[in-house]
Length: 295
Ligand code: HSE
Image (cartoon, helix red, strand yellow):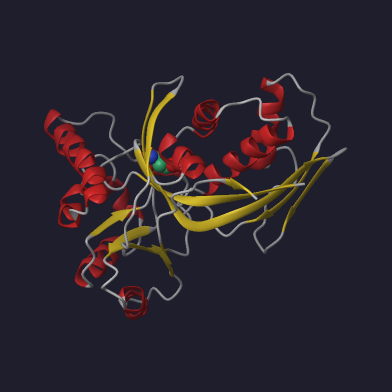
């Protein structure tokens, strides 16, 4: 069996819709090996499909097919720490686990670039799949065939504190509410801010982050789908966050806080409770610069 560790990801980073994402210190673990049938088990209480529709299995099978290799079956054991359908890259983590596992089992026929491309083709969003594979902050453009990407390691003491609601939001549904067209002015609003985010994070100009995460392409349209989402944003800023944005397609809300703001996550927990959001979970995370690792 091959053991794989895959990080959660936070896509969009506010204005960088479908193009920016970063990896976080929060992991799924997958063991995978060839077998004479399909044997899939979840090692925690997450219910996962135990047939061909399992995302790890189907991604692995795709790679076997592409390589012209016959797959008799797989044994998959998965530990699913990343909450499902919360905007933290749980499906990307499964796709990456299936692809990297299959690639290793077949003797590494695909290069890293090919894995970046194939994972984006399968999952549809390189802003989740690329950082899950590569770690750090990734800028990615998917031209329909291949992904043009740059990964940068981020050396920072910033904390990424995420408030995770107790309800799911499927990406497909969260994309249905987006407008077909946007104005030239709104396009410029977003592209300037997306460009500002990475360089501000990488150069330590954290005071820019609040401006950089504002966007007009997705967050305003998705926000009404998150019960008390606006209040949670405000709570983050009231506690002194540098920036607050919707992680991926939501519904989780990410807050970037300085390390000197030591009590940030505890205070956030207290505020969420006082808002009646006791069922939301708070995770205090760092950026993961390594990406997926075969252990
Ligand atoms: N960029 C995608 C979206 C991320 O916001 O819909 C979801 O995987």
